[in-house]
Image (cartoon, rainbow, N blue to C red; front, top):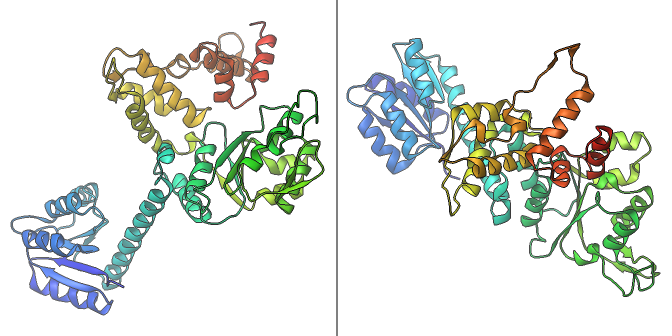
Length: 448
């Protein structure tokens, strides 16, 4: 195992000797430099894990050294030291990327503790980079974008569960990327060379969904003119992704439970059991625990599915990822044959950051694509964004105070429909409801 490398930089010989003695006793491999230029050469040759550097030195000072180190070796953690402590130098050092800022004379225990913290921080960053590289190593997974704490926690879970054969339940609002996470799990599993089969349980009638999942025999029902293999069997040696698992009927829940327990299926209209070797990854935007309490979802099936639970955060809960996603979607959609859109104005970005994003990442993606189509220049402006996002929401009624929830719901549904040119299916997708819900609401509003 390579020992931890520490570089001490100070033009004072006594300070270097004291710090070297402390770091050697901690078991570190220690080098010393008395000026910034020599220190930078040592950083290039030996790539230390931590640099302890004085700020006030002749020639290259500590701030300039810090900047140069971060340009060449961003993983190296730099701790700045100074006998001339001031708010300005502290702010300047931290803004330049210093891990910490300590003033002389030193408290020896504080020096030891801060170096350990810097090393822990470096290891955490390296772990997160490794986990994210693992999750996004395959092409389809490049849509997973973000570096927030909440998303890094998801990366860790995916990286840990992917190599196993455990059943996974992914929970999150519509548009948070549940299928992308399912594909990430499959692509980094031992089943990656097998098929990935996705089934949308929320859009098919019960009888049709059962036939699609398990297959049917000829004559099993009207229209079954031949024997048909189901999607579960088609996923042999691979992964079957069951999206919107909370929408399946009680009868189908029982049959799915049998698959998880016995690892076999039975065709609709058939009597023979067929063994299946399939990993199940399920997803839902509903609270299955609540459905279990209400008697709408089998408790035994819930526990079979919920071996590993991955909860995807809503976009509003990881706002720091929004600029990252905007850049990603600009890159994805901004280079077309007719235009080259490369940026977002500060005013438009402010609107994007303030919006609630009920449709999450999917809604953001559609909005950026819409804005790229609408803009006539290389930078997206506020007027290019969909009206549902750019128009300020009135929170007060002009006649009777606050608007009711019904009024707000009506306005939001109509704005989303307008943004997607009346496409009910897309609007339902963004809002996280069924298309029939949109149609029912429009009838209530007296609109077609």
